[in-house]
Image (cartoon, rainbow, N blue to C red; front, side):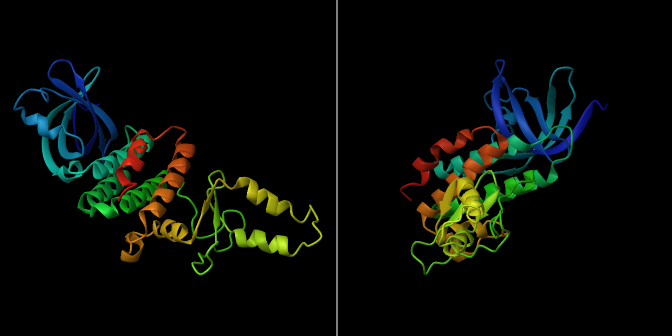
Length: 278
């Protein structure tokens, strides 16, 4: 095993170590998740102080230690200073980094995860305040996609029929099943009911099964926002979706992610405070 290695990584967690050092959790492209000591990072005027900050991307030279790796040299490649300018942007960045940490692996390349996280942190940093929540949801969806369980949003997860939002029908709804992995076409259920005026329970069994699996309901605006998340970029008209709709989407994605990762997303606790009045 080499005594030293190089890596490009972004700092996702940091904690004090001893009197002057900091222990960093870093997502790297080449080696996945690593933990390394930034010696002297807490000293006044230390060159490592800025390089060991959260969301800083460094070109790293790391020496392998018996118990802990140590950062021998770090050159800043990118610093997301704009993320700290508002609580909303900082919370969104912490949320995405927490999701990345939940799925990151050690001792193997994680280039796709690294690049997607950095891309969405960039979008959050550059976003207008009213669009931060939309970009957060976009990032959540794409991190879930990398993990292998992005929700199915364009077709019913049970019948595989297309689910098309109808804004002209005020009470239109689609279902969503966390266990089933995506949206449920309620119009198929309605057709089953309409075609069974005599109430034959055997014919209604599929309908009952669908309703029993629904964990959330989405109106037309919420579904359209959800469906747009699968795209590479968010269209301008989708960015204009009302904050209350984006909050509903975030709560759904949060519940979905927590179910699949089997742990709570601690950073989500501030979401309502950050965005409710925007």
